[in-house]
Amino acid sequence: MTAVAEATPVDAVRQREVAAALRTFLPSSSVLFEREDVKPYECDGLSAYRQVPMVVALPETEEQVCRILKTCHDLRVPVVARGAGTGLSGGALPLGNGVLLSLAKFMRILELDPRARTARVQPGVRNLAISDAASPHGMYYAPDPSSQLACTIGGNVAENSGGVHCLKYGLTVHNILKLRVATIEGDIVEIGNETLDAAGYDFLALMTGSEGMLGVVTEVTVKLLPKPEHAQVVMAAFDGVEKAGDAVANVIATGIIPAGLEMMDQAATRAVEDFAHAGYRTDVAAILLCESDGTREEVADDVRRIQEVMEKSGAVQTQVSRDEAERLRFWAGRKAAFPAVGSISPDYYCMDGTIPRKRLGEVLRKITTLEKKYGLRCANVFHAGDGNLHPLILYDANEPGELERTEAFGGEILELCLQVGGTITGEHGVGVEKINQMCVQFSAAELETFHGVKRAFDEQGLLNPGKAVPTLARCAEFGRRHVHAGQEKFPELPRF
Image (tube, rainbow, N blue to C red; front, side, top):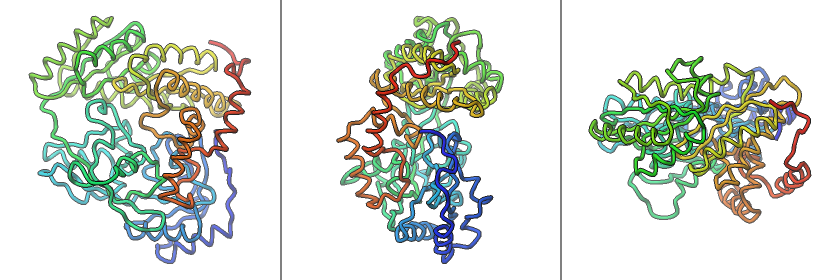
């Protein structure tokens, strides 16, 4: 996959036809098609891929969403749903011959029930806004992506987002109870239940992480949790990345389930410290942030045991957060890793694979080898507790060939994840970024089963086409190119 730049020219007649059909029930200001109006929607957070949409629709009600979908179904126009546009796999990349359906106006928290510990929200509600609303009741919403200040709950459902505390509290799928979803035919279906279980197939899990390919979420019922009484972070510094990787596995082996367990290598900590001043050591190979939460007694016991494990695993220093302000500062640095890396490089490419925890050190070492192979730097940030990697490949899109090398580098990282028993995504989704690696992870029979599920929900293939699940023809072509290219790509590159 290479960057999309006006890949699909707009059919002006078709554009006017679709816009006119939508304006029969939407205000003219809610149907955009002039270039200067639609260009801001050309990409999501993974800005390497761009495509200006044919038409942008901005509904305000569920009924309008349904009518937009029915109109597109009747006109055979593809539709891409979009939230805040913070996604990192190109999942909300528009189509030059399609409608971009923005849910940005769906920003209401419809109901918050402290006794049931639930909140019913529209898809455009920001992740952090749910916790802010629940805070006066002593509650919060657990999944906390680094983009939680901006990302929306509808997008979190589409990508099954996680965050730094997903090790203990789970991903989005573990923290929602019910969805209202609009089908491509314009019907509303309710999926899930406000109880802990429901009869029939688990469509809630199927819809969560489906990347907008099966339906458009119009409402989400989320679980709320009581705020922990106390929390502390142990920050441990290591003179070798493999020691840090081993420490992660050792912590889990003790039976401790940390609230969060994050790892950053030296390239990442140096960028973060210059950017956020979080108090990280920059003279070590890696740091771990390991948080315990619960009662004060539980936290004190966990912190003591975590420090012992870190020291036995080779930590050169351990430091415990002294108060809430310092704990939040440690986490603020981790959550600032992506913008921090953006401050030291013209562009960066954020990968997202998951591996067995015990292979962390090995994979980091191999990523270092790939840096030399491709002549590109890579800063590594991990949700280490669940083996979710976020290598950040630094490049300059203005330099000819660098994006292509970066994509090849990223592809090898994902295939390395598969080789050690992992998967190509942990929380960012597949989108367009990883679609070729789906051909490596899954067999033709498995991919055909995925397409069968897609057809059951969207027979004409109008919802977010070309994302997440590759066609068998694409996989055949990728396989031919992959074998032909061999493993020693770009042999002419400079080496570090």
